[in-house]
Image (cartoon, rainbow, N blue to C red; front, side):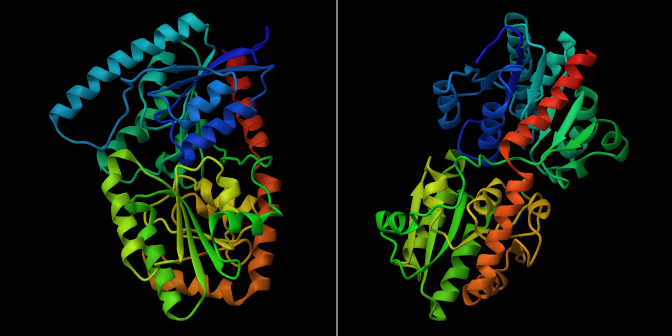
Length: 390
C-alpha cells in the first residue's frame, strides 16, 4: 500500500460502526490511489469498519479521548469537552510529526482537534460535512463561522448540507461531493430466490426493506405502521429490517423490537442486526424505504438500494433530495405520515412495471454518478491541489 511517492494523509472520524458515514469513509479510503496517497486512519475505538481496514493493510490509530462534540449543554460538559480537545489536539500534533503527514482530512463536524492540529502544524486541512445541523442553534452558528476559518477545503456530502454555510464561504471553500457506493459489492443479484429461502421469507411475498440505525429519527416506527396498514388491506407483504443498534440509544431499538413483535406483523417480518453483507441480505427487497423524520446528511442506504436496482421511497429531507427524482428513480413520502407512506408503497406494489422501471433508472443513476472510485478520484484532486499549493 505504501510507496516511495505516496503522501501520508490522516483520515480522522468519530466512529467505526456500520453507519452511512463510517461506510462512506471506508469506501473513500479503499478507493484512493495508493501510488499518490497513504491513508492513515484515526478512530476513537475499534469497530467493524476499522477492523476491516486493518485487515486490508491500512495503518489504524485509536485514541479513546477524541473531542467528539455532542449536543450537550451545561458548564460541566463544556469543561470536559475542552479538556478532551487539548488532549486530542496534542495527539494529532504528535501523529502529524511522527508520520510526516502532508494533509489532514476530518470526516465529521463533531471533531475539532484534527483541524486545530493541522493549523498549528501548517499543513492543509479538509473538513467533510456529513451532518445537517439544525439544533441546538449555538452549535450550528459556531460551526457555520468556525469551520471555514479552520479548513482549506470543506467537502459537503449533499447540497443540503452545504446550506449550513454563508454564501461567501460557499464560493471560496465549499465543494459538494456526494458519497459513492462500491459497485463491486452492490449490484443486481440473480440468486434472490436462494437468499429468500435462506432467510425464511416466503417467495410469494412483496418484500419491503429498511437498512439503518434503529433510532426514532430514522422513522422506523412510521414504516412499521405503514406496513401494518397494508397488511390490514390484504396485501401479502414481508418487512425486512437490517438494523444497527446504537449503544446509547438501545432503549429506542427496544421500542422498535416491541412494535414488531407485539403488533400486526407477527410472521411478516425479518430482523437482521449488525449485518456485514448488507448487499446480499437487502437484495430480496422489492422496495426499499428510507423514512427519516429528520434530515439525512446524505442517505447512503438509498444509494446502496439504488445500486441493487431497487426503487426507493424516502422523505425529502436532506441528502435524498440530491439522489431521488420523483416518478423516475424513486418516490418521496411526507415525513412522519404513515398513511402517505402506505399509499406510496401501495402504488409501487400495484404497478410492477413502474416499480421495475424505477429500479432500472435508479441503477443507471448510480452507475453514472455515484461509483465510489469516482468519488475518491474527486477527493484526490482536492488533496492534490492543496498539497501542491502548500
